[in-house]
Image 1 (tube, rainbow, N blue to C red):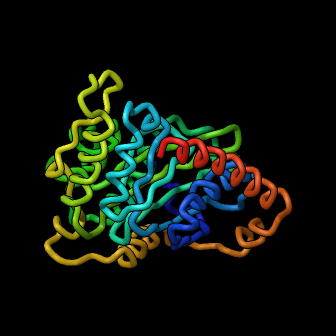
Image 2: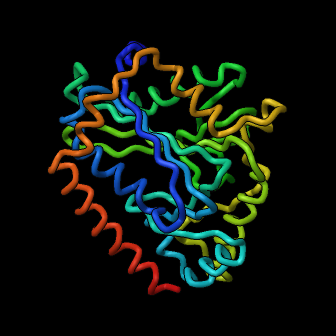
Length: 274
């Protein structure tokens, strides 16, 4: 079940600033399209400064313009990702981590649940001190079946994208910082976006106390760098050269440009709401 950990892996680390805040998803989509060219599974780390990452469903908020003003008042940037789901927070205390599994390196395609289970295996191995469980934390932001929680408080969420060549499993993980404030921001975002309208779209009723961080659970400060190293150390064998070569291939660069155009159009649509 856990033999995948023994495979060599490559790594890609992206510390991003707000003007490049869509870059993580541009690369995620382009890398997934290039799965058949990967010689190993890939670990993808990325971080963002104070940003609210919106899901496609958030466009249905009847007063989205007012919700976006809440982000601005809190001093947060925002953008619309090109996938489903709901709003999540990214800042210097949140680590985003993805695992790419190309199908040609597997004996068969992983089921959706099997791909999620691989990510959960990695998180548990990286943080053995925590009694990590999965299951929806209803009053968290962006609740889902594979929420990562400890004692009922959510510390992360998992999603995935897949195509004919592979799957990417994506995790956001609260490492440190003011999780209560993050929760209050997302709560206020939806309160403003709904106003007095009926919540027929089932946007979450966010309780800020429903989420916490790894630092709070462990009782001492854990940095994002510490968390990266723990996740990296789960995999004993690293092999970088062939992945670095992939990043300069013409087909990959074309995919990046295509994805940049596509996600740029999404942001244009969002700007019309504000």
